[in-house]
Figure 1 (cartoon, rainbow, N blue to C red):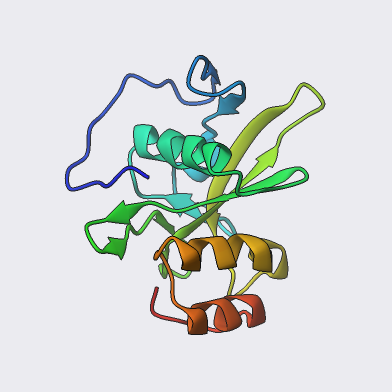
Figure 2: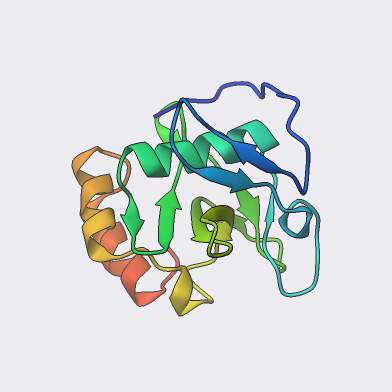
Length: 150
């Protein structure tokens, strides 16, 4: 998993489909709807290249449940804040979904406390624990939608 101590800006276009081969065999869409503050939407505060790296990490680690994938990034020994919800609260987990039948993915910072659909499955959370990204008590709190210090 990439570790970020500084932001590296790659020339990704917003609202454009990205062919990510040969790294992975998926297409990703960086949506402007989650790159700026809007009512009732979370938004990325990391760079577009970090958003894409988070998605690639979700795919290469098989953090995928049918048409959803989940990601996170480390910053040293802690998780990187990926974005904010519309209440300006920090979010450290990303959710990626298939945009259409052509298998184009897009993502956003997931707000597991406020949205049931933004909670990764137990299998993914257990894998994150095994890899040392989260602790056992985080699994319970995330699944219940309770605040926790990730």
